[in-house]
Length: 311
Image 1 (cartoon, rainbow, N blue to C red):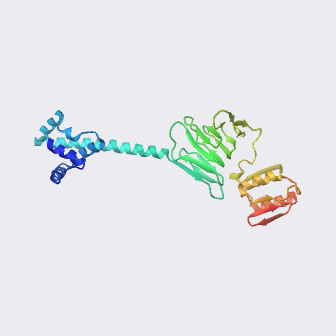
Image 2 (spheres, rainbow, N blue to C red):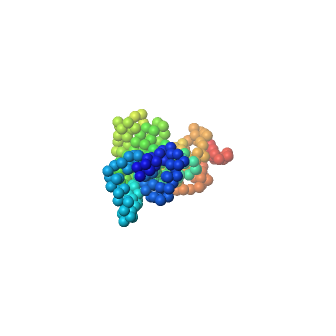
Image 3 (cartoon, helix red, strand yellow):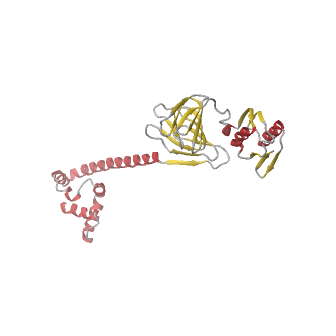
């Protein structure tokens, strides 16, 4: 038997002679389970096959194998060992796969002409404006839930007091437990408006921080986080299509409208036709909105390709 295990060691190392391979084949045919187990030990580096039969323990087992009444018991135990090893190996593979799955990140760029909703693994949801980019993991792990956004997005966060949710931008970090808020960001600034809950807004280096609640807003700019006096009442219009203007300069109103209808409205002669707009729109057709503007401000609107010119 010791010679056979020496041959098996050579076999697993791909260094046997044709004659030795015949003996391995015979052993494999008669004792397939033991062969597979020894092969597994060899691959895992758990046992030196050449020394396997020289130990005192193996000699005792070998003596028992010679007795027919013990053969069944030996191979039954062998099968149990193999089964346990398979469970351990499969569990390790599953854990490794799950860990890798958690580490995977998805980068989603909204290339459509309308807002898009994304569901996160924790039950939170994110609405992305046109051209906005969200980077997030397929599954959150660790003590925090972290995502990155560029552009404009609205977050509705599932409450989890043990795992704070953080939104990272080019120059800021927004941390919450469970709330809903709007983020508008570009490479230089980040503006946050809270719809519900409490939010901490900080610079990227965490040196400047402010806390804001429902109906409040903050701005991160020039390495400083500051609380704003009052948020833009149309901060979420890009998503809802609802607008409210109260003696609002036309140039500001058009900028808000373009967040929902696309950059289709252009003012050509604002200095010639100054106007402040007071009106409310709730998901109106663009043609109806332009008719109201034309009537309210007494201006002419002309369409050129996909652009409406106000003059």
